[in-house]
Image (tube, rainbow, N blue to C red; front, side):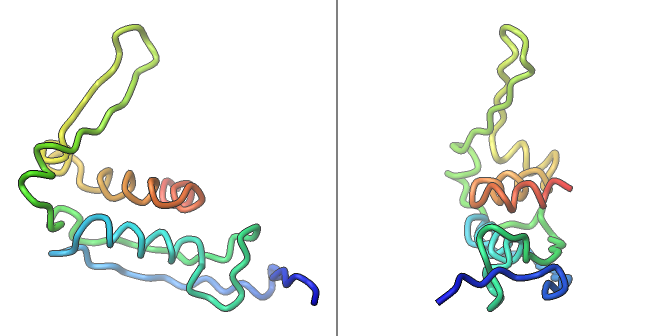
Length: 118
């Protein structure tokens, strides 16, 4: 049996709106990553981008336990000596909730991270 490879004409992209209110961050991220990669479609192939477009609303209303909000730390580095910056989930969620969702999706799938950043 030959390997199926979807052609560009076979790929139909849909738009999905995901409500993040009272949803656990990790479960939301895996669902969004799956939609972005196109794993829910019968024509899925790992070497072809068959994914859909996803919009996440109410990212500030995620269901995060207080212990996770204080304990989870996000790191970023400016590239200069001593340029390591750290921020807790609680602070980042208050400052930029979209970044929290993007980082979580990025951790689920590298391909989905590229699409989510665009």
